[in-house]
Length: 99
Image 1 (cartoon, rainbow, N blue to C red):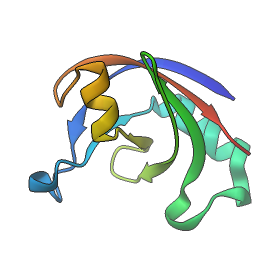
Image 2 (cartoon, rainbow, N blue to C red):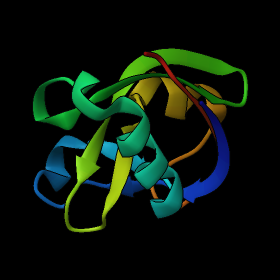
Image 3 (tube, rainbow, N blue to C red):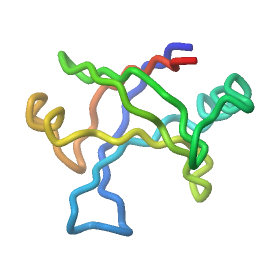
Protein backbone atom coordinates (compact mmCIF):
# COMPACT_ATOMS: atom_id res chain seq x y z
CA UNK A 1 0.00 0.00 0.00
CA UNK A 2 1.40 3.36 -1.07
CA UNK A 3 0.16 6.72 0.23
CA UNK A 4 1.04 10.29 -0.69
CA UNK A 5 -0.38 13.23 1.18
CA UNK A 6 0.37 16.73 2.44
CA UNK A 7 0.73 17.09 6.21
CA UNK A 8 1.78 19.63 8.80
CA UNK A 9 4.66 18.73 11.10
CA UNK A 10 3.82 18.91 14.80
CA UNK A 11 5.67 18.35 18.07
CA UNK A 12 4.48 15.67 20.49
CA UNK A 13 2.82 17.56 23.37
CA UNK A 14 3.82 14.91 25.96
CA UNK A 15 7.52 15.73 25.43
CA UNK A 16 7.75 19.16 23.82
CA UNK A 17 11.30 19.82 25.06
CA UNK A 18 12.64 16.69 23.36
CA UNK A 19 11.60 17.78 19.87
CA UNK A 20 9.73 14.59 18.89
CA UNK A 21 8.22 15.70 15.57
CA UNK A 22 5.48 13.87 13.65
CA UNK A 23 2.98 14.13 10.83
CA UNK A 24 -0.48 12.56 11.00
CA UNK A 25 -1.60 10.26 8.22
CA UNK A 26 -5.09 10.84 6.83
CA UNK A 27 -7.80 9.12 8.90
CA UNK A 28 -9.25 7.21 5.92
CA UNK A 29 -5.78 5.89 4.99
CA UNK A 30 -5.21 4.94 8.64
CA UNK A 31 -8.42 2.88 8.55
CA UNK A 32 -7.13 1.11 5.43
CA UNK A 33 -3.79 0.39 7.13
CA UNK A 34 -5.59 -1.17 10.12
CA UNK A 35 -7.67 -3.34 7.76
CA UNK A 36 -4.61 -4.34 5.73
CA UNK A 37 -2.30 -5.17 8.64
CA UNK A 38 -4.75 -6.87 11.01
CA UNK A 39 -2.72 -9.07 13.38
CA UNK A 40 0.59 -8.18 11.73
CA UNK A 41 1.03 -5.01 13.78
CA UNK A 42 3.95 -4.82 16.17
CA UNK A 43 4.27 -3.44 19.72
CA UNK A 44 2.06 -0.42 20.44
CA UNK A 45 0.17 -1.24 17.21
CA UNK A 46 3.13 -0.06 15.11
CA UNK A 47 3.32 -0.79 11.39
CA UNK A 48 6.64 -0.83 9.51
CA UNK A 49 6.92 1.65 6.64
CA UNK A 50 9.32 3.23 4.21
CA UNK A 51 8.82 6.99 4.19
CA UNK A 52 9.93 9.75 1.83
CA UNK A 53 9.96 13.51 2.11
CA UNK A 54 11.70 15.24 -0.77
CA UNK A 55 14.96 13.39 -1.38
CA UNK A 56 15.06 11.79 2.08
CA UNK A 57 13.99 8.14 2.31
CA UNK A 58 14.04 6.14 5.55
CA UNK A 59 12.49 3.11 7.23
CA UNK A 60 10.59 3.47 10.48
CA UNK A 61 7.15 2.65 11.87
CA UNK A 62 3.86 4.51 12.06
CA UNK A 63 2.02 4.43 15.38
CA UNK A 64 -1.70 4.66 16.12
CA UNK A 65 -2.94 7.84 17.80
CA UNK A 66 -6.21 6.87 19.48
CA UNK A 67 -7.11 10.50 20.14
CA UNK A 68 -7.03 11.45 16.45
CA UNK A 69 -7.95 8.04 15.03
CA UNK A 70 -4.97 8.21 12.69
CA UNK A 71 -1.47 6.80 12.48
CA UNK A 72 1.42 9.17 13.09
CA UNK A 73 4.82 9.12 11.39
CA UNK A 74 7.93 10.30 13.27
CA UNK A 75 10.07 12.71 11.25
CA UNK A 76 13.74 12.36 12.18
CA UNK A 77 15.85 15.42 12.87
CA UNK A 78 18.19 14.47 10.01
CA UNK A 79 15.24 14.49 7.59
CA UNK A 80 13.93 17.81 8.88
CA UNK A 81 17.38 19.34 8.51
CA UNK A 82 18.03 17.88 5.03
CA UNK A 83 14.64 19.01 3.73
CA UNK A 84 14.70 22.35 5.59
CA UNK A 85 11.37 21.77 7.35
CA UNK A 86 10.28 22.22 10.96
CA UNK A 87 7.20 21.98 13.15
CA UNK A 88 4.39 24.05 11.66
CA UNK A 89 5.52 23.50 8.05
CA UNK A 90 3.39 21.52 5.61
CA UNK A 91 5.18 19.04 3.38
CA UNK A 92 4.47 16.26 0.88
CA UNK A 93 4.90 12.81 2.45
CA UNK A 94 5.00 9.38 0.80
CA UNK A 95 4.57 6.21 2.86
CA UNK A 96 4.85 2.60 1.69
CA UNK A 97 3.49 -0.04 4.09
CA UNK A 98 5.97 -2.89 4.55
CA UNK A 99 4.28 -6.21 5.31
